[in-house]
Image 1 (cartoon, one colour):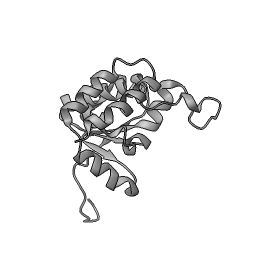
Image 2 (cartoon, rainbow, N blue to C red; image 1 turned 120 degrees about the vertical axis):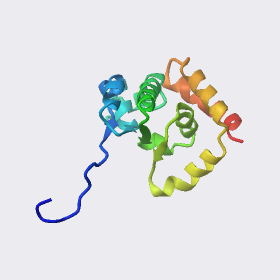
Image 3 (spheres, rainbow, N blue to C red; image 1 turned 135 degrees about the vertical axis):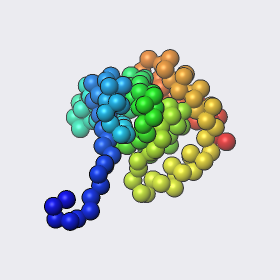
Image 4 (cartoon, rainbow, N blue to C red; image 1 turned 45 degrees about the vertical axis):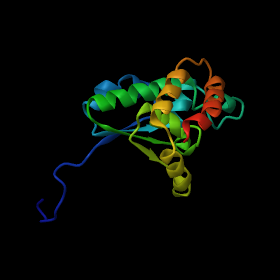
Length: 161
């Protein structure tokens, strides 16, 4: 630059997938962004129209709801078609029952608080990938978030080696 300081000619630009509109247009966004990060807290809240901070409807805020998982899957597939990396952040990224789901969906990275790293690494090391993919296929057949969560809780011991 004019001041003689070094700078990157090209920096990577990522996009947060936090609203259904972004997930629905993920194929278009993948052509422009260098990577995706799926924000599970907001994506869940906006997909299910259930404010997680409003005690009257917070129980409806189910991150493992089939519609949320479908939007995540759609986003991951769109990014991967363009050879873009996908991270997942938010509470679900560190939730032990959710980790196999995201691995089965094909995410490249989980962004978690430092205190969660040991348990996340332990779970990832012990996941049977093909079983995790099968679990995701079963989840797509569920109707409610409660159904999905029950499925995951029941199948989790079978997926871990």
